Structure formats: structure tokens, C-alpha cells
Length: 188
Image 1 (cartoon, rainbow, N blue to C red):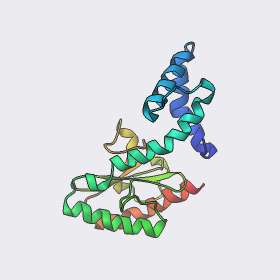
Image 2: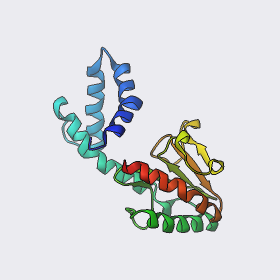
Image 3: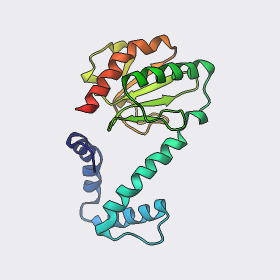
Image 4: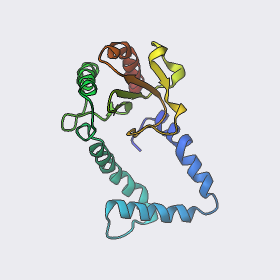
């Protein structure tokens, strides 16, 4: 999967083991679904063999991530002038922390090489989803929220973690220690 062991284990416990439990005794049903899904999404002219399905999906997934990022382009999100200003200041601060892969001048999920934060544009503010457990925070807790409280976050491609909301550019400086912590944790 090309991910560190810790992430593979977390993905398995969060998703794969639940899928396995649901299809226990009728694995062929899931295999058929997965073959159909990959064929449909990749516009293949034929279905993959079961033994080749994992590789077909792995090859398809980077393209899927790219398309999702394009759909969530900041240029497509209606933002107030204040929100756009917050985004520009935040972007400059993030570039000081790490070199960011930026698609057409926008940020979405920032990976180094694993997810450590995701920028979520809103009409009147900017939110950040950090890849940290709320209990692991070493910074000011008054600006952070436990993102596991919500079933989903609009425009987010990742789940859980810590949510930060910025209503003004002054909020950004308070969040920098938490962003650095998430960045350092992603390198472990």
C-alpha cells in the first residue's frame, strides 16, 4: 500500500476489518462489487481478474485522489474577501513549515508523504483538519476541536483528527504550534 505500518494498521482497523466482517461467508459478493467498481470508475473495457484487482485499484487510486482534489479546488468555493485573505496568509505560513504540493495555486490535502493536514474552505472562514488525536495536543486547546465528534466534515477527504477554525488572520499564529506538531507526527 506504500504507507507506513502505523497508517496501514489504522486503515485496516478502521475500514478493512469492518468490511471483512460484513462479508464473512460471502467474500465473492465483495470481490464482484470491487471488480465492478474498479471497471466502472476506471472506464475499463473488461473486468480485472480477482488476483489482479488489488493492483488495478492501487493504480487507479492516485488518479482518483487527483480528481477529488480538482473537484475541491479553492477557486470553485465561494469565499468572502476575509476568508480568501485568511487562506493567503495561512498558505504563506504553511509554505514556511513545509514545501507544499500546490495544484493551480490552491491547497487541499497536504501530504508529506502522508496526510498531516487538510485545508477546508468555507464561505466566511477557513478550517484545518490536522492528523492528530485530540488527546495528543501539545498546544492551546481553546482553538482546537475534536473532529471525531462529527460523522463527516463538508469538503474533507480525511476523517477524525483535530479541527481548527480561522475567522481572522490573527487566529493563525495561535495554530502554528499545532500545525508543526501534526507535521512532525507525519514524519514519524
